[in-house]
Length: 271
Image 1 (cartoon, rainbow, N blue to C red):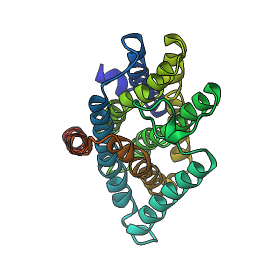
Image 2: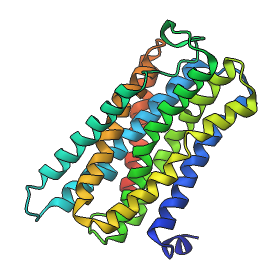
Image 3: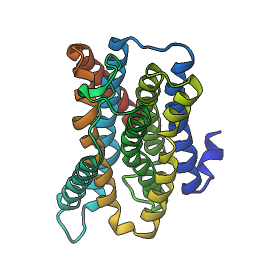
């Protein structure tokens, strides 16, 4: 099976990997077929775990390879990584300002006392999480593109580990979309469709990432760091605050440590 995967083109590898991450999003969204509500402690723990995975992936799978790739270049090795990292965070910050800020909260009927109509709320929730899936798909695409470009610090097992880690953290994201929609009265089928839809952008952005890297190899350290900065912004802005706001801070923090550890083991052991 692995030999078959190795023989595929980098675009196909990235596409298949992000179909897996999309599938994990759909699996999380499928919770709506079993219940209308979800235990808040479990949900906050899942969010914390997802945050730990994203932090570890940002360093081990993105920033560290970016620093290694930049060595021996015209610029200091740290400069492309620093520029890309800051640009990724600033880009997500800027886009975040263009849409209303909305944390998924399973306990409240409406977010922060606001009572928009159901269609508007559904659109905002799906759009917000879909937006944050773009850098994750981009990161996977860039990782497979780096392998295709034959960079010494890039490896296929590390790219696969990144896809596995992002797939793990996509599970609670699918739940974060579908459960609030179901609680508001939307049908199970529609709630599931909206939840899995939020992961659909990852295969698209992954293919874009592969093509961009293979066509413009000198930009690879910037691209890896950009994806890392965007992911860390999502963790700091959305994931950690959402996991702490219901009083489960200790649980969420320990789950974050567990998520970081799991992703670190995956990346180092497979890389």
